[in-house]
Image (cartoon, rainbow, N blue to C red):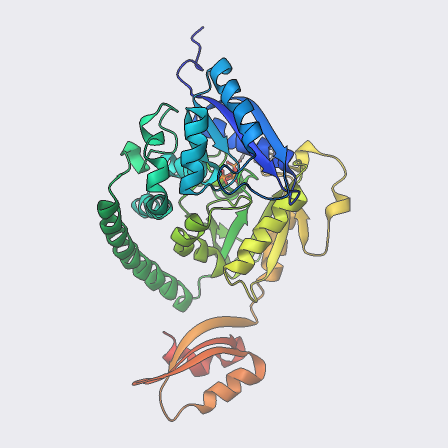
Length: 412
Ligand SMILES: Nc1nc2c(ncn2[C@@H]2O[C@H](COP(=O)(O)OP(=O)(O)OP(=O)(O)O)[C@@H](O)[C@H]2O)c(=O)[nH]1
Ligand SMILES: [Mg+2]
């Protein structure tokens, strides 16, 4: 049989344990990420510390041990579980004489390999370029070393630029192209709102089964895989509810703990799809011992993205793998198995129940002279923002559907 590991870089994973989170579990996840990126993990190491060493992240004594290990075991790639600065990258590489990358570069690399749509590719490249710009001096020699190219690959196998001026120019181009795409996306969203299309999004930690659920409910045919970040681009499909209503169900990119800041920034418009939904399904993998932490990561990210009044259902997936889910069940949760179809009926009913429409969030342009409407809206709903423009008052509001007939002419 052919040995598929021959061309895979041999990787050593390294973490400093500051006691802030479960480092064992984090290294386990880093190993899965490394595997997804195509590396062969040969060992993991961690060091308890009170703070990061500013020059080398971990202590110099431990770094010497690592350098020896790298020589003895022919390690091609060191992967640190923390973001490293330019000088840390440079110092570690000089001490260990092998390629060095960090958790962020690894995640960006996976995203780069996975991005399919033109928007996804631009978003990933933007995150990569912004991350690399202040670190070029640290990455300089690492880039020319082995390490299987992990960390140096752009979307679609293009090698990333190493010239600072080129990168700056490229960042500007990417930003303006993405701006255009975001405008188009906003327009679509506005049209959906105007047409009264209700949107339900599936969000959750990577690998919890979001795509499997979308496929099972709608035959969407999205790739489902036991790998991290199988999905990057949002996919939407129509879904019929038991009460006859048709909603739009969206599957989107998964979350991960300590999601690189540059990725959140670059993927903001994709993630905003989730924020702008009428209902959010927070999908969790109940068979994963880290489920509670994963759920928290998702909730935190949703909060950062500005979720306010959007209703959320907690959906406990992969119930076929465990017994005794009752312990985790609350008023707002449903237990399912996306694989076997268990619990689908209850899930659809819950969605329908949560979507009973009492209010609708709209943007209105209210002509001068009609400002009284805002008082009426306020009485049964909410006015989030109002801005006085040339043509009238532009307002972001939550309207009681009883008032819909009065405002329909002013919907933007
Ligand atoms: N046993 C079991 N496995 C499941 C279930 N749902 C999903 N899986 C498996 O979990 C793995 C991940 O599923 P995906 O649907 O790709 O997960 P995802 O949340 O879309 O992952 P990303 O796109 O990577 O964020 C696949 O191997 C699925 O077959 C389930 O209910 N039971
Ligand atoms: Mg997926």
